[in-house]
Length: 295
Image 1 (spheres, helix red, strand yellow):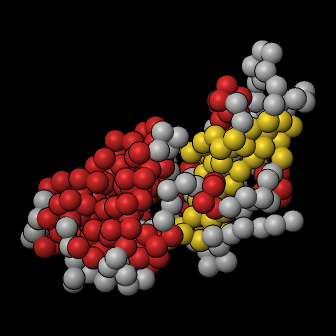
Image 2 (tube, helix red, strand yellow):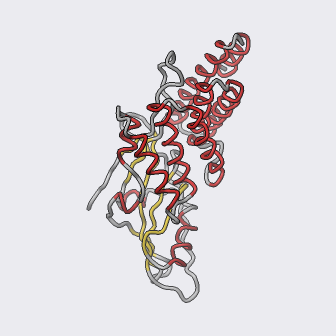
Image 3 (cartoon, helix red, strand yellow):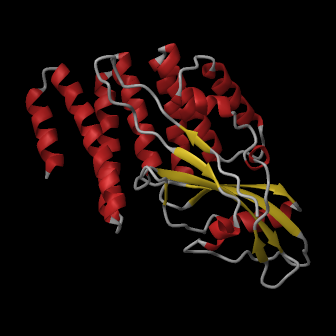
């Protein structure tokens, strides 16, 4: 049995030099084990197209909350790939958590054998590069560490994803968001970063909902970029979207540990938002905001 695990980070610096808080981030982990596929709490069997037979290999990503948000065909007949992808988008997993308590997006792959009835699903050990073409590990490393060269790497990653006909909207969403984060961290280009976050936001409704943390994160990212650009009115609006999203998540989940994690993020967002209001001498609004989410 071969297990391939790769932790990829999305991380950025604080919205301003005076604020040491970090923006929220998502970790990404690959697992090509049969145990992971069997852990799905909701599955849907692919419907085999008439007179079609064969096997396909599909790579996919879940959201932090466990829903499949990106699936792409790697091998096999295109017609069967489409049938398998339609089914895999209906799969749901329990949220995955690292030992440190960080919720992660999970990447994996499944072989769907349409020669059997119903189609048989199994795992296949494979390389990360095959499962996620276009991914540049240096981009993720630069987000975490101290490598200004990651700006070019993340830009190249975005170009590769955009030029790949098999890329999904969520592939592009992630690449845009990551490039925006490194621009804020190393190039101090918040206006350009805000434009990238805006492009990502237009893609979010393809697979994400307001009750997904990734939805909250990208609005939070744009709020920070707008704050750095001096566009405080729009920053206030985006902070509010992020806060409402995180509050929705915390109320929706049935697991207290998960809810507490997102309540903690909500508190951080509210603190940054209130700091922005105070800087604009909107002290009463800041107090009201803090009181509202303290309830």
